[in-house]
Image (cartoon, rainbow, N blue to C red; front, side):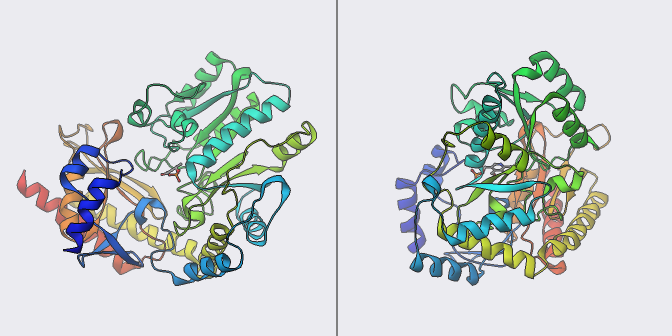
Length: 435
Ligand code: PLP
């Protein structure tokens, strides 16, 4: 009864993100979740589901860690909010900025805080343009991003997003955003065509998440780094999904041996326990901004460095460190890849297995050799069957692909990885039987 009442209210009053309004008002919510523990979510009707994508690739330490709630309560009862505008500060923001600098590579040592990934990327675009302006090159404004990238939904981050439906949602976008496919030759050609003197920055996820867990060609980022250096273009890494251990390295770009100029972060910094993100700049950028410009950094969110969010993020990073979770990501990531390999060998319509750490994907093909795809994606049907068996899964079909993606919490055990694989195995078999 409670579910029915809540579902009616939900249909009436709640506009869901990235959801068909029509379908939602017709069908109502799928699950109303009430609790979480480890890799599991529980809903109001008592169903327990494996959260195989860590919700939105973000609940990295897993559900139900009461210590984060305690950290939030302690901070809020002491100091719920004070502004960081105009140079004022508080302890949790200072401690978190220091902690982030310990995690980030190279000379990336200074963080601007936001409430999430979209804001972090918009902040980076504005900062990159401001940087060139104060260096006397105000025409360096264009931002290059990659096709199938996802950078968020604020006006700038939507404009940088390479998954087309997100851009087509609105009739006009922010100006000066360019898209490129994932070959270094295409990037070189685009820079030549547009003129390096007009380009402020290149942005990329280390491994594209929402676009399908896509790894770049080998050496791609090393070559991008060289090209950016040669042409005076800032290299922004969108580490919103990969950052803080998801790939088995501290940051996704560590996998490729590359240090960017700016890192954007969100999700993993707090494992979703509080809405917080950030942009980290290199000492080189900071020095230029300091020495060439005496005015304000005219960019700030009310919640830049919210005390409770910072306290929660600190506790989250402490747990990741104390429980050696990045090591578990490497070990369990190997198990996940083993499991995906088993599926690939068993089912003749699976191929293109990929991933790093606890980020993995596999794709359906009508013919794996010729890469011919099914007229109708199979991955969504497998996800529906997996749900009947207690697994919340993710199918990705952007750009014509037919992908199953996995990003379970870092606390996952070998046995739990096995359960995910066997549920997917049975779900594929059932979909096959029905064909
Ligand atoms: N960048 C990447 C790589 C993401 O995956 C996301 C969210 O999925 C974002 C940016 C946007 O972050 P948010 O939804 O916190 O604004």
